[in-house]
Each structure stands twice: as structure tokens, then as C-alpha cells.
Image (cartoon, rainbow, N blue to C red; front, side, top):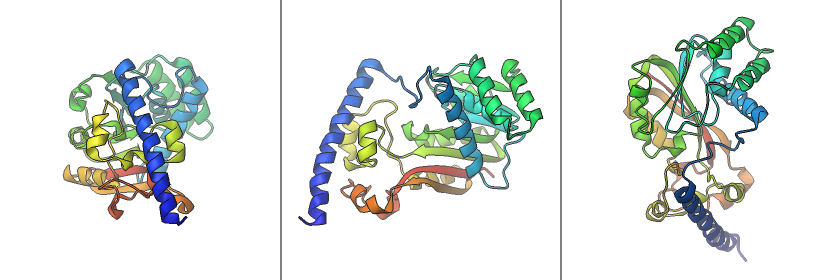
Length: 296
């Protein structure tokens, strides 16, 4: 049997399996609503600490070398089950941190978790920044804050404040309208603000993700939306983020590849994509990326 025939047979079978998982996710959402912000269990304190430090480190690593976190007022979109990322950013010297979300999944009272985050950072960061962060977490006075509203009206949630750094991790792929979200963060960005958003473009159902990370792109728009639910991956690709940021006046917009399909698996895992995901400009080799943009 030819390789193209092998791919065709696999595409049919993996599409059918993916559809089963898509329907199951839709049913689960209908029955239970939104419940799991990430793969770290709510009771796993050490897991949350590791996630927070790793994520904050990734933001810093992908930022332009000329951009420092120190002294910046930071806005995080949809931090999930913990504000540990904000604590980590304060430990790195950020001036202030505010998180906004649609659902109240985190708490400002996770003292043990926050202390562990700062203890882990203490070996590599200035003692003065670590101690300032400990103080701000205990007595925030507006420098460590968390606001939630189902409308996700970002300008209203930040009370008219402006920010120098706007970040998110595995959040943007869940927004139904990335253009509206980018328009809203543009309203709260100071001149010189930098955006750093880690986007996970892959299928989110665990078993399918491991075997066919691009599975959600195998279905037509009408079929995919037939089983849509809040928070479902929006299937927006790197070029969509570049266009949306540029349309709102951001400059130097680019998407850095953070995870790609291994070259040996590229033909197999990018075969059988539905339109328009079968086009080269969709960069179906990119499984995760970091969107970087600068506000003039």
C-alpha cells in the first residue's frame, strides 16, 4: 500500500475518533459547564508552583532582549487556577500585577503557594525584589489584584489603568473573538507596552492530542461549530494573530515557534486538513507559539 493511501486510511480513522472526542467534550460542557483551566490539579500546590515559575520564565525568555520585566505594570489575561504567575512576575521585579478573567478560578489568599513561588525564585533574583513581592502579596494596596466578570470587559475590569506588559498563557486560543480581545487590550496599553501571549494551537482532548495534535483542523467550519461550546479552541492560526494585532496599531508583531511537529511526522500529521487549513500560510507545523507585539 502506498504512503498516500496509508495517510488516507489514517485520516479517515483519526477523524472519526476525533469527532467522538469532540462530541464528548460538547456533552461534558453542556452537563457541567467550564471547570478545568489547565492540566494542574487544584490541590497540587507543587505543580502550580512549577507551572507559575515556568510560565513567567517563558514570558521573560521570549521577550525581546531589550525589554525588561523590572518596573513594568503587568496585566495577565485569564490566569486560570492560580495567581502564582503574577507572584513570580513581582519576584522578577514587576512594578504591579493585575489579572482579569471570565471565571473566578484563582484566589488571592494562596499564601503557601505564593511563598513557595518566591522561595524558588530567590536563588536567581534580587533579594530586594523578592522581599518587595512578599510584601505586595500580603498587603497588595492595588499592586496585586484580580478581577472577574463574565462580560470580560477588559477596560472596565482594570478601572482605567494602563499597562506596560500584557501577557497570557494558553488563553487566547479559547477566545471566540480574538479581534475584540486585542482591541480591548489596546485600550489599556501604554505607549511602549509589550504583549507576550503563549498560544496552544493543538487539539485539547488528551488522547487525541498525543496521537494527532492537529485533529481539530480536520473538520469543516460548519461541522466544528455544530458542536461548539464556550472555551472551545477557536482554530485561529499564527497569521490571524499577526493580522489582528497589526489592525489595532501594534508594531513588530511576530509569532515565535515554541513547539513544532517533528520533521519525521510532518507529512503524516499535516495530511488531510480541512480548508483553509490545507494552505501553506496556515503553518500547520506550528503546535504552540508566542505572539510578541509592541504598542507604539
